Image 1 (cartoon, rainbow, N blue to C red):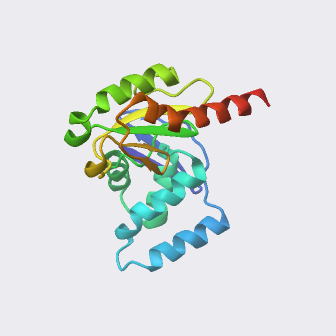
Image 2: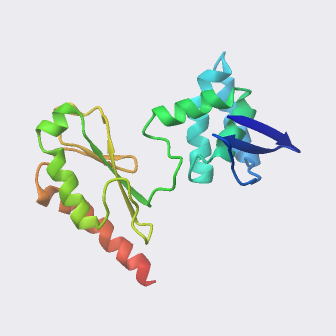
Length: 188
């Protein structure tokens, strides 16, 4: 992986493919928030995860250009930023739907029916795991652990946990209002 700097615009090269040049910058308010985050830590690298949250909120996804911006801002190697994004499920390098449905697949959830949960969601949402609906309303993902084993099976929609999702009725009670809101939004 190489990077070139031209007038504060990064061009990022992943495995020999040059990513389209795109200028990304944090707003003054975001810079202020990042400054406050960095100020809380004695090491810049310790601020990486909170700053990635700011970046994801600002740009929607953590594209190569955004990762390069974060690396530049924190004065960290780009590969370090990339490895953190690839390790943690909460960061998205590809666009996700307005409602990102994540289903835990750890042992507790698997034993209590997360496979059935995924099958029901695929049918209900009309997408397979790893896909986003064409209208952008829903994405469906499997994640390794949502750290809620005592209330398995668990799904998270954006940042909200839904526990004890053992039946199709429980899933429908959560998903149906979101689908209705998506339909209303589409008809506007």
